[in-house]
Structure formats: C-alpha cells, structure tokens
Length: 252
Image (tube, rainbow, N blue to C red; front, side, top):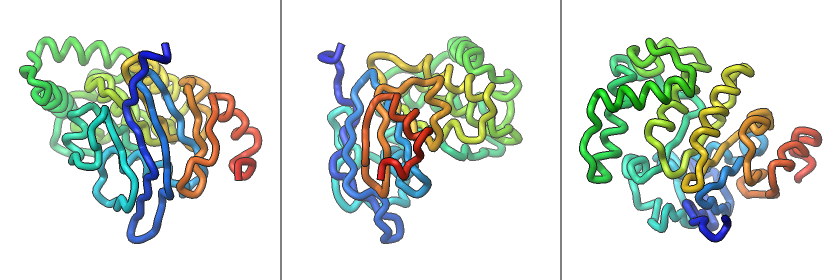
C-alpha cells in the first residue's frame, strides 16, 4: 500500500564532478521502501557515478545538492558507516582479495553490521546455516566460499558472489551497478532470482543497467533514463522496452 511507503533515499539537485568535469548536473531521485528503480542510459551519462557517489567512493566531488538516507544526511557518513546503516553496492567489476577467505570475509561483514546494531557476533553454526540457505538461492559452488574472495572466479561467479553478499547482509537499499554485464543467460537468471528474493516491502533496489534484458527477469517499478547527467525521462517497466526498440536518441 502506497501510504505505508517510506522514503529510503532522497536525492536533490545533485551535482558531481570528477577532476573538474561535471558528470551529474542537478539529479533528483526518490526511492521509497518496497520499490525497485532501474537507471538506464548511454555510456558516459553518469549511471555508475550515481551508484558510486551514493556508496561513498572518494574520487567524486559533490559540488551541490543533498542526499538523505533514512532521514539522515548521507553525505556526512564515511563509506563504512553507510554500509552499516544499510547501503550495499554490488560492483560492476568485483575486486579480488588474495589471502582473504570468502567465508571469513562474509562472516566479518555480517558481524560488523550486527555489532553496529548492538547485536552480538553470529555463532558459527548459525552463520553456516544462513550461508547455506543463500548459497542454494545463488547456486554458488560450496568450494568457492573456501577460496580467497573472487580469486580465480569466473565473471559470472564474481557477480553471483556479489548478490550472495547482498542476501547475507540484507541491506535497506541495494545498489546494483551493471550486475548483469557479461553474464550468460543462465547466470543472468540466477542473479535475477537473487534480486527478486531480496525484494520486500521494507527494502529498495537501484539497478544501473545499459541493457533491457535483466528487466525481463527483475521487473522494476520505475525506469529512469539518464542523459548527460540528468534524468531525462521516467516511466514504468514498459519504458525499457521502448528504449530497446528505439535507442537512446529517441529520448534526446
């Protein structure tokens, strides 16, 4: 019901530069609890910049505007605080962490979030049970969690591992930065199933994508077209089909 929705994130007049080049030029966007938003647009339009700025990547300069996350000033939080408050970013290019076992990495991340909320660390048996549940959803090989994070993983395994992290951490808002890029159809279906499993009335999802095909499996409530650092057009999931048919020049 629309009257129970609460704003998770409110972005107002956001201007962002990288090395004195303005990328986002007055962007406005509100995502409420229970909503899935897709941001589409041509290369260089600012899609990944938006996800990275929300997550707190330091290389971006915010020159104007505000971002409120759960009624708090997001821009005053460092990236770790943002994560503990319930933000999650699935990277377009997940990094390898040689020497850091995936199991330990995932358990430490879950425990850090629990401690931030005043809870105790999760018992190993309890964590293993939770991990097994999520591994089944993501169809991840059990052996992968025994290996170093993303080391020697295929592209599809890395992306599935990102969504596995999301399911374990259970954030309030998930940012998916081109999580569908480079996936074959089977991996795309598994990743989409993970996202659909995560969807609920109290959480939000912002999907950054260049292609419409993931939206065949994860139906967004809203689709926004980003052109030259601003949202040029918004609509429902049918807008993605129009873009697939006509291309981005149709919007300009």
